[in-house]
Length: 263
Image 1 (cartoon, rainbow, N blue to C red):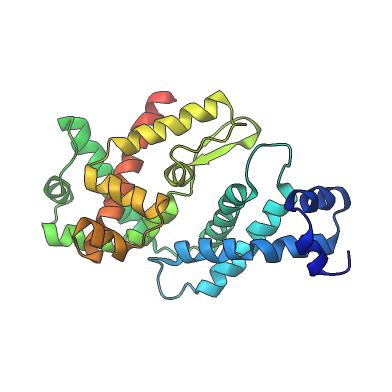
Image 2 (cartoon, one colour):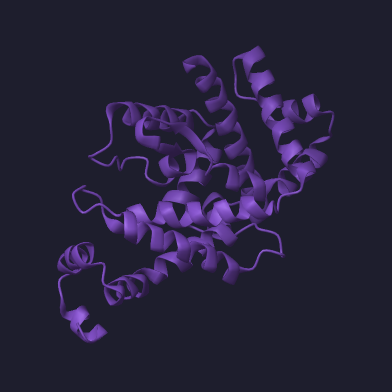
């Protein structure tokens, strides 16, 4: 195998089979180059809403390690597309590195937790979806202060979606983000237990207020930007950001209650 031109002429499945047999570095490098656009795509999604001190190029660098890990661990016997598998690995690698450098201020994480707890308390008491005014009142804020708080915690809320929500046999992990991005794409090799957990998350998403649910689906599943979602919903981009943050926190609050009931 002397050149990438010859590799480009080969069937992709044959390249994978040959690499798994030989572990040839040239084949690995070819696969890394072939799937490099996936890293840029995921890094671009993660970069949205991050503070200025987090560089896009750094995110790409973190993601490359995830791509390399995905290439090494990809199982040809499982009926899963490599792109689907790799995106999860790449995103996980980026978020793992962000956690290691602890870029989110503790005060912001604390504030996000306070909003989540307020929602749990209100909805547990009333049995209804908590309104913005009710959440603001519970936090001792006026409505403008509440919206300002949502803006401040927007970056950490996205990252929290990648945290494992369920860990089963063989360290099999499911995050909320995995389910939002593929609400109807259950891999055929997953266990019944994993399938049931994903369905719990889907059900929780479906119980969100209509606008919040639409924002999640349009952003994670349809790949629209916040600005494009604003045009669809006829609201400002900043309002979409607030809806997005509130949807994530409300979803986490719902799932925390569900998890408590399961354990």
